Length: 258
Image 1 (cartoon, helix red, strand yellow):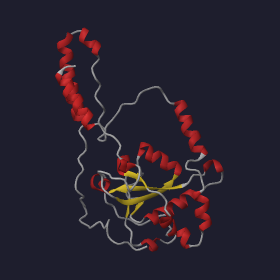
Image 2: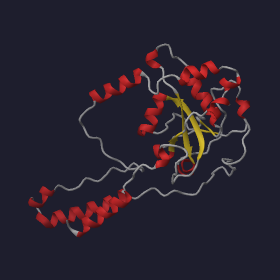
Image 3: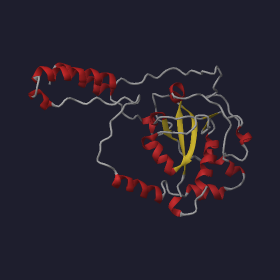
């Protein structure tokens, strides 16, 4: 292999994105900082979000995250229990943690009212956020006894609701069936690979082209251009220091009242 290609290959090996331990559990080390906010959801949405889609909302001002895990768990319980008229649609409440770097680069830092709770004032010490969060900033947060014990359901003495919803399967039968059907109906068309900035991965020149018009010299020139494009494509996104465009102090680490 020629020298330019060797150099590009070394850059690729050093900078190719790989998942880190911090994406699988909140207590694992992560380059994106500690978990500072939580999102409550159901097992079906959890599979989609953590499978690569990330958190997506139709409106960045729609508060879907809270700095209080029990508040998010309460919402997860409510979502898990809503409109479950058939065992086919039942899936377990789930929790997702959002690491601090997500707020540094991709978050509007909107602070809004909580939603979906009977008495939001019980969690008045928490802050609330809305926005789209890419997968690499998210991690799994288990539903611990401490978190569940401070939910609205537990406070109202409805342990039966907690026990019932936590006994639901991690993924509903209807969701599993839908994913299987999508795989069967999937087009063989290969979608373009993009990086975290949305840039399409460059296409490597065919080796056969060295025997076509222009010969080896034209092929080497195309390879040099390809190597330069790949070097740019594989550049990682820099993790910036936390910034607050509204000049307010985001109290991620302070005491919270429940």
